[in-house]
Length: 388
Image (cartoon, rainbow, N blue to C red; front, side, top):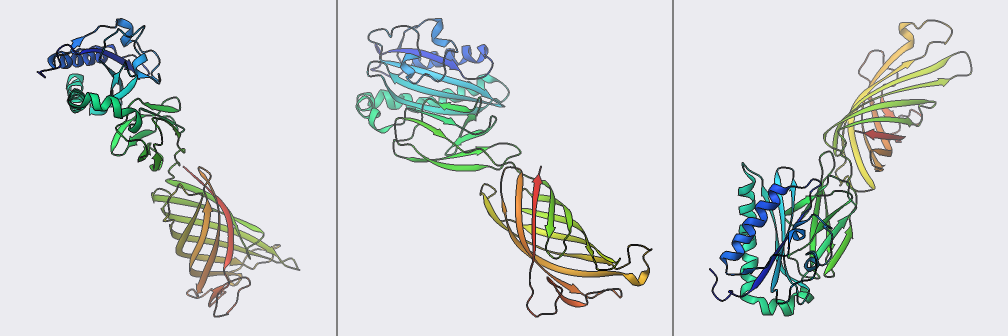
């Protein structure tokens, strides 16, 4: 019992924020909350069944969520906004002074559903008790000071539906219909709060939001899809006309990948001869910066083989007209992020090793044109990757 609170009147209001009504949760939450307040010595005022309707969960003034006129002499309203979010119960308690029309306290509680919903509701009530203690101890100070220094409510818009939202270290729920509503926050006006967004199949993202008023509306960026497989199409200078295709496998989505590329080029000659190139390449690639950036650098290292066919186009190829050159190389480039489409440009520096007996290039840099200069001239590659 909390002596000295006898005669203080309280009303309980509840709102269900889930897509489907949860009457069992509502009844249990109201019953446990009422029992806690009565045990503290409050006199309960019944506002009627409409005090627990689903109603408009985005009502900006929690004190007016209750139906009809607020009875004279009512000291405090305790509102409980709740939702079932996967395997968790999220309850947002708000304490409102109906006379002054201000929020004077509250807490956001997230509990695992566990074996029974009753356990989760009891744990949420435990989280509320410090806010009730503070209100009972400092209610006159809170009535004077709360309007100026506490954020009363927060609307978050923008991320895709299904995105989980975490304020600081506390997960508050999942975005539905393009928004999520936080009817109470413990943060002072002017504070900067990290908001973390996460969703399966997307990169997690953290954004700092300045809470510059009592009522905050903020639009957050959408999450970037996480790519684990990529297919590419590209062209390379000095191997034109021609085109190549590639496959990327990302052990670390959009950051580290194993790549395989195959390129074909036909270069007509003045006579009936045409030089055909078949270039295969195996690489390891790394793009260390955040996938949320529009422009990101990357680097690759690996090697492969170039097969050169010098046979005239009007007769069958013989062994002395087919050459193969093993090479190693490195590449650096940049790619632009447009969701799952990533145009890129890179510079390739390759060196022919002259390993095979049927090599054509010997030991030299593969540059445009093939040269034995001690300083390589990079090949330019332009392409696009589509990830899944």
